[in-house]
Amino acid sequence: MPTPCPCGASADYARCCGRYLDACLPAPTAEALMRSRYSAFTLGREDYLLATWHPDLRPTDLNLANDPPTKWLGLQIKRHTQTDETRAIVEFVARYKIGGRAHRLHETSRFVRLEEHWFYTDGDIHQD
Image 1: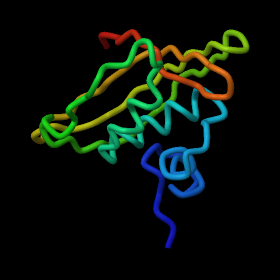
Image 2: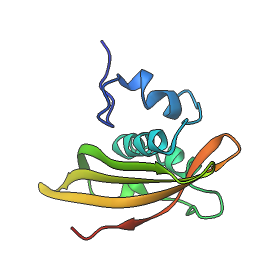
Image 3: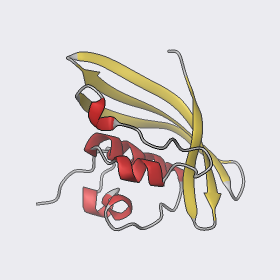
Image 4: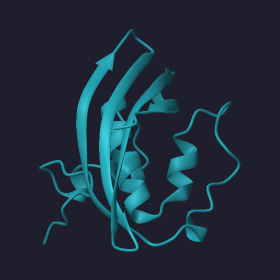
């Protein structure tokens, strides 16, 4: 039976974000990379998160295992704009709970494409 993709897309995990996280295919768009990074957070895939962070800007580690248990509730892509051949932005809202308390992360993330791969660079968090 197909497993729903954590990113909320209509496809099952293997045909959606699993192609990038498990089969190591490059995400074709910044939005696809954003969705796969959200799925990586839900699955605790620090390796994928670091590999898809721009090499000049990524931290050495994320220590996700040391974070409090997080229940991811959903991802909403509000906007995806490719500003030129190598740059794009994705605005999203990720909902989650920690210790039973609901939270929202509303961010406009920046991405850059190097050769055939999109990478997360940084983002601005919205104070809603």
